[in-house]
Length: 635
Image 1 (cartoon, rainbow, N blue to C red):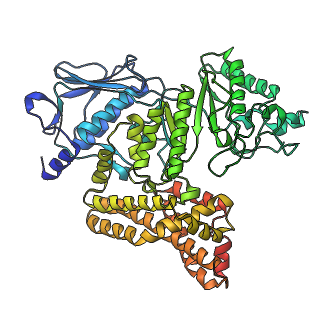
Image 2: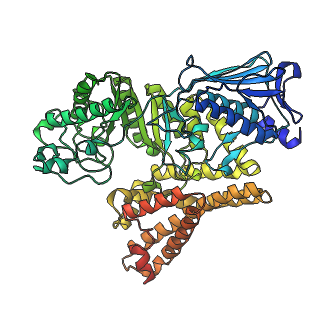
Image 3: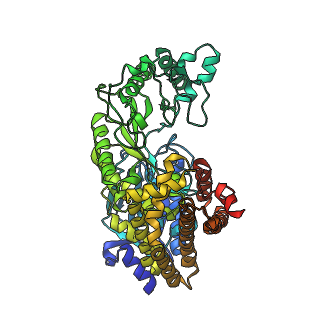
């Protein structure tokens, strides 16, 4: 074994036990093993065999044959599905000279992870555990540049090997990430997925299209605001709010669900979640369930009436009607905005309901008040109902604008909170590039499988294997970025409020966020750049490392241009003379940022470009190319 391969083996913990205590799967450029998969095996079981063959060959150059039945005179790796294990669970075991990789699989040919149509992939998970533990393979990013496959002379396992695992959570979803992070190989190889069909998206505006019903003579189905029924059609998944207290609305929703379940026996879940946003009904039918004087205690909607009880009454009423026909199906429903908080009157939720708690505040948990609120909220809901899931946002482009914003130990704390509270899974937004959070997207996959996973080990794997000799400064870059985000979150509120006045042309909710970015990141730009320079120096001469570190340079360029542009807006708007010369750095920043977004959008980061284009337009960002400030500064 070469010194480089030996070093990798030691880093990965690959065993070098005495020959008598191990099975040599590959050694000396050959193998006595074949992969055995039954002719009637499920497609995902056959996929597991293909994945094992592919990565063993890539690591060693040896192609293990895949056969339908065991050959005489050969040693065997049996890959087989069994329903004796939990969904997605697996077992790896040696018996004599043979190796068994078993898992709980289910039918389905799609190779992607689909939460609304899940495939149980126990055998794939067994193969991925084998490849990680004994070959050293990792899939840190969803493109080949983030794939780690060591070159090995041999692959061995202990002769008395027994491994058995199952996921802690039955729903493990990371969404809105880089291209390929939701659909494709990356989520499957990192063991994301779900045990049940999961449908909880905003849906009520489609089930009861209020403008259609108004034309048919039923404007009373629409939500009432300020004494008027709002019958404007829904735009996207917002708007179109209905009167949930109207018994006819309840019956329409229940009938829609029942008809769908009757039409398609494989349709096991249906979302009855309200549309996005507020706009809820103020009629007496709805308000009768509210608790007088109960107000939202935290966030941008502080002071609004809490309406959780009325929404749970609506969910329960629909579930009661549906369960009479289909007691074994499930209904998904959000708990969100002004119906996020635990109920005061409702004492139980129908057992067919899947409640999805969506505070979307985990990215703010460096604020101690938000952190305590976050913890109390999930603990309360976890104790209230036995089928509760989390919906939360680790990265929001409308508040972070593509800047690197790791949460540090708060990442692990949130997932462990879900486990402690008795939640059954989580649907989490991650960043549009892998540089948005450093190691944390990979860390989240580990924790969603096992909340007790060692987070320091995961971080050392990520930085050490991906960046090798440049690991030190790269890790320091993301640790500094975590400091920036923490300071942005625990900011000097008076200073932030002062700077936020400069962003009056932006929509109201991002103004403080933009000011916070200046306060949090501007003092650390020189340190961030130093870490990038150090990483570039250490990576020089290794084309693979140079390409990985080049993405770090892009992350810094985006950060520096964003902060420079925001600072120029502040200097101009808070200047009583409105000296346009102060906007010159803004033009440079906007145009440099645009050049970067075009380049990365055509290569490795289309999700970043798309998310920032949307954010700029949606919030009227001062960084918008061709926007107000760009035009003003160029005059």
